[in-house]
Amino acid sequence: MRFTDWATRVLLISLMFVAVITALWWGRVTQSNTINSQADRSDITTDWSQYPQAKLQSTENQENKFPQDLQQSSAKTNQQTGRYQTTEAFARYTPRYEMASVHPSNYGERYTRDANNLSVNNQAIVVLHETAAAASSVINFFQTPNEDESVQASYHALIKLDGTVVYLVPPDKRAYGAANSVFESPNGVETVTTNPNLASSVNNFAYHVSLETPPDGRGNNFLTSHSGYTEAQYNSLAWLIAQSQVPDYRITTHRAVDRSGQKIDPVSFDGEKFLRLLHTYRQVTPSYQANN
Image (cartoon, one colour):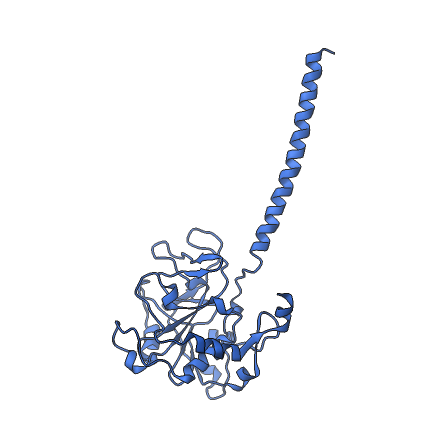
């Protein structure tokens, strides 16, 4: 065999060997990246049961008068699994409640894909608002058909001055509580575009709850403060959010998520007071503490 033929064969065998080694290495890298990617997303879920459900906590009203979809969202909330469980203080507090239908034009479905057909699975957040008007006026607006998407609006729940919890939009539906908005999380900026003609927003993964504004804070869009919210409102708000699995750091305000530069609500809100009450009504489960 001539030297050139021998050298050619050795070169071909060497190239084949290198190709096999490279293929095996690339397969391992790809598998490792897939596992790591899955691990990075392991704590991100699209589970609407994380939000407060409609807890029918009194017998003062007849359930058969309430919207069927809200009745179906009613759930036991003394969780023993997950991050949080409710406390004895939660069980002892029984705020009044009401349910009100919202016109279908003012809320929608939560999307699993955005306007670019990309999968979305953000963790739940809670966004706190205030009404800027009487509760009855706001509810009437939500019950009015609005074909113009730029003015459609709703909350999942509203808390009146006397602490009454008004359930509006079921938690598994998308309320239109914040238009141009983003949530700044430890993992980066979160927002979802569901309509290519409108600004992106947090609505797809937000639970919106609003406090009724006191009389001295209504009718003036330029007010930056008012007399504040009642003790009953703070207690009912904390009681409502205690039913959720949304962690403290994912509870935010309309002011914080707004990117229009126009929203500053809830004004005169005592965040520290709210968190103290929230921690009274819910606590981290022993199983979650043991695993973290």
